[in-house]
Amino acid sequence: MYWKVFKWVCERGMQMGMHSLYQHFPIECRFEQKVHTGYKWGKGWIRRGEYPFLWGIPPGWGKEKIQAYIDYLKAQGVDLQRKPEEVEDVLKAEKSTEYSTYNAFETADLIPSLCRLVKEVRQGRNKKAAIKKWASQYGFLGVHVDADGDIPSWESLADFWREAETLADLWDKFRQVTQRDLDGMREWIRFVSLSKGVKYLLGDKWNTKAVYWPFEVEMREGETFEEAAGRSFGKGHVAFSATLEEITRDPLEFYQVAGLHYILEKIKGKLADVGLSYTGLEKISNPHDDIFKLRPVIKPRNLLQAMYLQFYILLCGHNVKVCKWCEKPFRLDLGNPYSKDRRSKEYCSLTCKHSAKSHRYRGRQKLKAFLKNSPA
Image 1: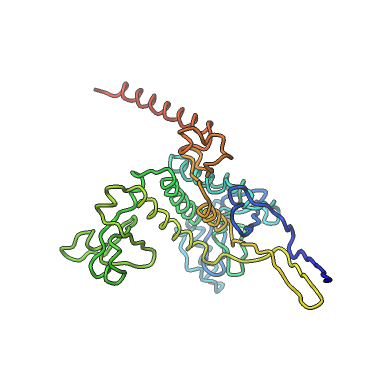
Image 2: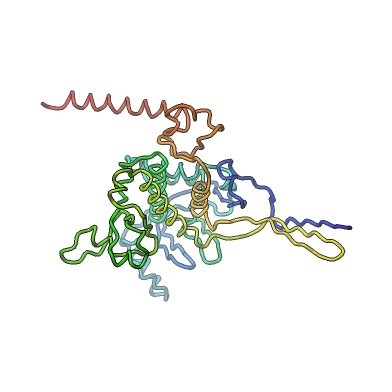
């Protein structure tokens, strides 16, 4: 039989590669991220929505000059509907046309580095300086992507920080689940008994459900929190056949399942509009038929979505945990030479173990010095 094979590469770079932590995923994922040659902080008003836009303000303008600018624009028929005190801090690329690129799925340090940024800022580091340094290495999160898929060469401080905190908090929950941190999970997961009405709708085999922080339930007069939470069941909830007594007796697995369900639901929401593409088209012909094959590729809309997709891929893998010190994901297998150590469930390497130990020692020394110098 006579066969002909034709291949067309439809996009630049047919083989971009994926980090080893993501290679088990059956579909190639790719996002070409821009990193501009320089970044600077500015101020302005941001129009959010389908087509975001930034009205920038020259540096050094005070409230009176800003108000005069607003009045001038209004006289010209442009009503910004903004006030001087609504000016936002915005990180801008110094030259929008000068940048380098990298494939976000070739590195596993995006999420950990963002989590470290959030932790350092919460501990007192200057927020704007930390964000600028992070963006200089990894680029914008792309929070302001528009309806056409274009990402502007600026990003607001408020939006960047909101998304950074959201992802960092979700990653910390993942760390608690993988590290069997039961005390940590108890701070944001509770279990309640289902009411008779809910059990009637779901089935008698279901007895309890998980409730998540901030534990927002609508309580009626004379009703306890458990009663209020147990009489509803909606999207995002997860039910268990075990009773509260059974969960209390052996809680770890139930907290882990409830925690992973919560994490997955949050990730799914972030990936709702992820894009599908392909890198190549192959045609296989014989005297009677033509067969066409596409090489599928998942392409996120922005760097933020790429990180959530990486998060999802890790959930689809095996034996992945989050290091308690550096926040990096690591595999508990033969590829990890540290896996036989009893501490392997906590740290990805001996370096992280020793760093954490030194940090704890310095903390104890500071506490001793503080107690010694404190008045009796």
